[in-house]
Every structure is written in C-alpha cells, then in structure tokens.
Length: 466
Ligand code: SF4
Image (cartoon, rainbow, N blue to C red; front, side):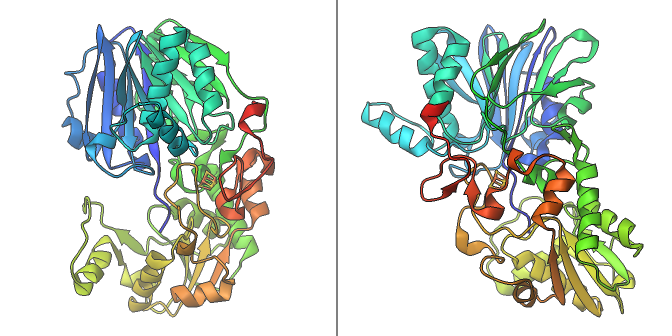
C-alpha cells in the first residue's frame, strides 16, 4: 500500500465572498487528506469552521455561512499529532494585529524542541501539532514587529523541515514555501480579475476557473490581496529538494508540479520500468487507482494489453479496526476484487507506484492468484523505500519497510509474487525531469535535505547559514 498523503491547503484573496471557492478548491485536494477539513474567512474578524471527515461531510455542501472576501482552507491527514478535532486546521491565534489563521502542509523537524523551549518560558499549548507551534511563533513575532515579511523571516529562521503554508492576516493571505520547496505550492489569478489564489496543486485552481501563474519559489513569501500579489524573497539561494513522491503518488495526475504534468511523469515511469524489467506476460493490471497511469505506460511500451483486472469499491468510507481475522479478510476483499474473466489462466504484470510494508501487495497478489492468474509479476514505479520520511509523509519507522535489507527475489517471496522489479533511481530522476540534486530522495537513500537528528544529511546545511 502506498504511504498516506499529508495535507492540502488553499488561500484566496478576492473582491467577492470566497467560502464556495475555498470549498471547491478543498474538494479538488481531497486526495491529500481525508481526516478533517476546515475553512477560515475574514470579515471584520476571523471565523473558522472545521470538523472531522471529508470536505462535503464537514460543510454539507454549504459553506456559505462563512462571510468574507479573503480566507484559507485545509484538508488533513495527520502526520504529527493524533487524529482529533483539536488537531484539525486552520488554527487560529490572537496577535497584536488581531486574530490570524494558519494552514500548513509538511512536518517541522524541530517542532518538539521549540515547543519544549517555549514551555519552559511559560507558554501553554493546546494541541500536539506543528501548526500550533508555527502560529504561536508567528503571532509572537508579529506582536513585536508588526511587519509581516520580517516576522515571517524570523519564523523561517527558527524552523527546520518541510512547509507550505497559507496564513490569513486581516484582508490578506500570506503564502509561504520552505527554502527547499519540499511541498508544492502554486499561485493563480481568479476569473474576471477578482483576485488571487494559492494552493497545494493546480487542480484546485482548475476547479474554480483560476489561471495558473507560477509556483511559489522555495524560500519565498507572497502576499495576496484582491488587487495584487507581492513577492518577498525570505530565505533561499540553495538548490531545491522537491519531494519526488509528489510525482510518483501524492499529487493528482492532472496537476502540474514544477512545470511537469504528473500524468506525463507517471506514464514515462511506466515505460521505463517496462524497459528495465521486461517479462513475458499476457496482461498488465494496475492497482487502482495509484498504479493506473504507470500501468498504461508499461502497456504502451510493451504492447501487452492493459486491463482493469482489479476493481476498487469506492463506497467503503472510513474503515474500523475489525475484531476477527475472518472479518479483516472479508474487509480486504470488500475493498478490491478481481475480474476473473480478465485474469484466469493469464500471466499478469501487476503495477503499483510504491510498496511500503508489502502487506497490501501480498493480499492483492493473493487475490489475483485466487482469480486464476498463472503468474504474478509485480512492477513498482519507484525505487525501494528503505528509510523513514520526516518531512510530512506517514512513514516513520524503519522496520516497517519490506524492501529494507532484502533483495528483489526475497521481496517477491515475501509478497508471494513470481518476480518484483523496481524503477531505478536514474529512471525516476529522468522521468521527473529535474536534476537529482533538485529532489528529495530521503526515503529512498536515507540521506535527507535537512538536518534530522540521527540521520545523514545531504548537502548538510545548518540553520544559521540561511
Ligand atoms: S523523504 Fe521521501 S516522502 Fe519524505 S519528503 Fe523526501 S522524498 Fe518525499
């Protein structure tokens, strides 16, 4: 099973009420987080509505109670802090300039250390999230400076990690991207010249008819008002380290990141795995939905027919911990079923974007065999995951990775497949089309673009060098 996504954010400054545009922007980003959703808008004061569940469950398709022409929004999958309403976003805090609200995607590596330091100084925290640390630090800086770029600079000098943020301060939205650009953040112009939008992915712009302008640069802060955007170069001058997983799995295929269509990258990856790991087979079957585009590339390269041989049940909703083995097995079968007529008596190439633990892949291979597959060859659209992610993705402990210290034949035996083939590192980098040193490859190499206690750092840079 692929890793879990992190979060999605949207911020809009307009001449008109923004609640519905934020709502639809969030719905377009639902794939980035399904645990909670929230919207904060400003009209004389900040009002915020948030809740657990999917966007349309929280807002019941009617966010119009939130007034104001400026606002931010967030969908969450928890990577820090547990899954409860107190940890949902946007977070709101008081500052000398009035209330501010913040929505964040990423992980702050030194958040715990900062929290401990501040607690010693008498600060009290309500939640366990990075976001509360961020907003409290920012509110404190604004109190002493009342100068947004300088306050943001001081915040960014203190924090290490991955962060794309939108902050609501009075009638403006502040979009901020970390100095390595690990998480995506783009800017667009609203229809009819009504203002501006910042969002995690371009699909949030598409859904409201906004026109893509550009990505927020690593280390940049952009002030959005209904009339203009104003850029401030806060920190930077280093090479970026974009998360490679955005192209492999997290982002929607119809999004464009750093000028590369995610769909095109995945298709290229599929072709490349076919070149690197050819096998005699009768049918190419994707793991829905994550392996679909990769599998199409594999099929195009080899001429082996592509079949939707596995069908995903889209109406399961949230799953619960089930009490018996039998119930758990039925639950797996409920999620994914094989189309026997497409599988029986065939040599199958099963394509997915990644393997973390291998438990789900093992169950899928078993499902294909029970449907009559004579061989199952697994092909994976990324190199093996062997190290944790500390930068916003839910893969934290080393011992969970099936690929760690195992050869491909050993992994194949572990998941019950006839063979396993992973995309090479060169293949990944070439298909994304950016330089290897412009990508974060931490979970594939164990070397991270920022200092993580106890881990190797690539081009190690101390905070004080910014
Ligand atoms: S460690 Fe892996 S998942 Fe985490 S940011 Fe880097 S590339 Fe992305």
